[in-house]
Length: 203
Length: 313
Image (tube, rainbow over all chains, first blue to last red):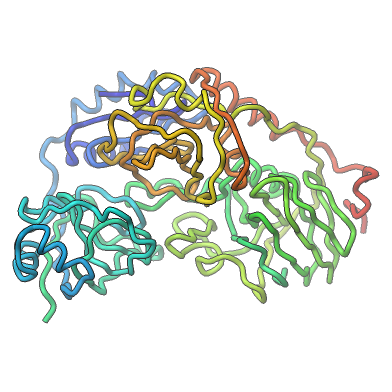
């Protein structure tokens, strides 16, 4: 589905992270005339057009055509193994909320290979999914004003690592010292869409 | 060279347009919160639109010019003086070697101080803009501090005056993708007060409690000006430093022509929103672009600009 989003953008809903990343990548490597930027979300792409150019709706036919030609099987990304010290402030509560021991939580978090579904929130932050259903907990009712850099956290079906000291409502189960964002590096973020992540307990 | 004597309440190096092209990796566009005014300030001193300049918030800095420079203020009108003499916004002034520029409070939240040649900082991911949230870009990724020293690039000798007008009246909005999640007119029928939760990423408004019919939506990219409604029912207008994606319903968007006005609002200011068509929004954008070009030679000082030294040597 393609909907207008403001006077100079369209929201293209694609139903899956793979298709959203695939359309956004296609629009970066082979831009459609008039498209300024394509920003993937979880399962959609925000397509921004030049504000002084043609109206965004005029792009819909070309976008539909592009969507029809997308590769359906994504390339498997790189595998990152990330060492985590599981001593997060919310580990006990996550365990009790999910009716398990903290060790069970660690075993579930380290026992699943996760994929980068999309990037957002802050530079270097990757939305990793999907967590096993036994590990799914809600966000904190009141977000913290500061979650320390390196915090490994979970919320719903996703996990993520805070790349900097940031406000946040995800539940923190551990920490890591991996550097997620460096604006002088190419690419500037460590975890790219499609990459795979395996967490490992640091001993 | 310029030396920071007092940093002001929040002064940072910014650039209009920010760093586009990195949002797919989670890097916000950022840049001047009121990009239009930043471009105007740069044009007044003959800089490129995206030259690095200072974004001044609420109370401005005091700067000492180690070397002479032509300067201009645009955005909200801030009280400012050059060597003790009041100077006006929207016209070029000359700071001499050893001059002190004091910028006080303004009639809005933000203004831009452009200096001919632009501030020389290392561009990161294509821009000089400071990302204060993640701490990179601009001057060491942070706001100015007393004692900071900045160098300027090579300057032309342009001295200009802007003769255009700033838009007034309600803040204009167009429908967002979740317009049906609120009753018709829910945003336009009320008066809204800017809350203290107002920064470069977003401005939150207090007013009637909004209760969208859907409370969570799949995270999606957010354009500049998107109006999100989180579960607390307070609409927030997303600005330059907004996160790349958001997961709350977006019933409307502030039009491109009026986003800078939202960035100029101070906590406690009251506004109304008015719905317009996308066609009107695009026309308004074009009009704002035309207004940017309403520049003349700086010419003779006006009576209320005693401190003006224009292009005089």
